[in-house]
Length: 113
Length: 113
Image 1 (cartoon, chains in turn purple, brown):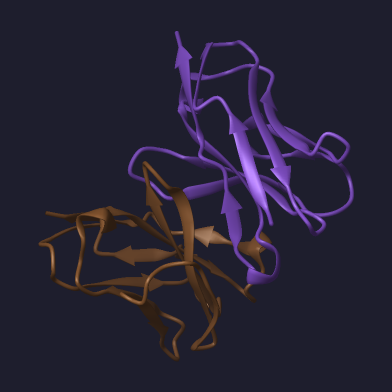
Image 2 (cartoon, one colour):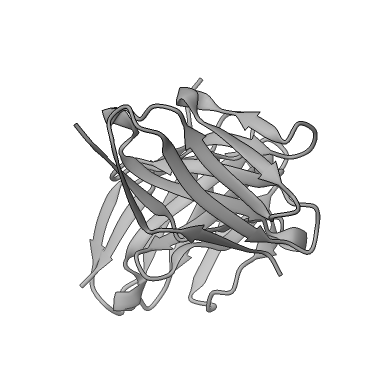
């Protein structure tokens, strides 16, 4: 069965510092992996995705993630945090035969001035 | 182009009542999926409709149902509301039902009192 674990329900960084949000997955099928961002009272916006091909994926707003099969990880990074990055971030994996997404519990990112 | 539109944005209902939520997908998209988001359980898949047929279903009781119309608009219905049904309900549309093509709406916030 597919599952996603996000380490750290809350991460706090200073503006300009590195952002690192951790995601580990378990999948019995070749994984499709996603990072979504959610601002308060909003839906989910796709940041980036890995389906096949290059394991380093670049997304919107300066975010990137690297698919590491040996570590079953898909961590999200951004070199320099901005105040506008404060939001909740969700990692997700394809749900196999159900054709849906399995989400992690989310990581709330705070950015201190 | 217009995004995914969910109505209403906010809803307050009383225990035991029923509720209907609406989702209008992006023009040309034939698949609509529904997710429930709660603080305790996170994001969970409800069901997916494709060309008016329910194609996949999550692990929710029969009180949760849905349908899709010929114009791809979808509704979900929850009967005999319980306090635990309070949640943000998100729908996502995609052109052909593939999860890597999801676009989410802003959600309907349902509060059951």
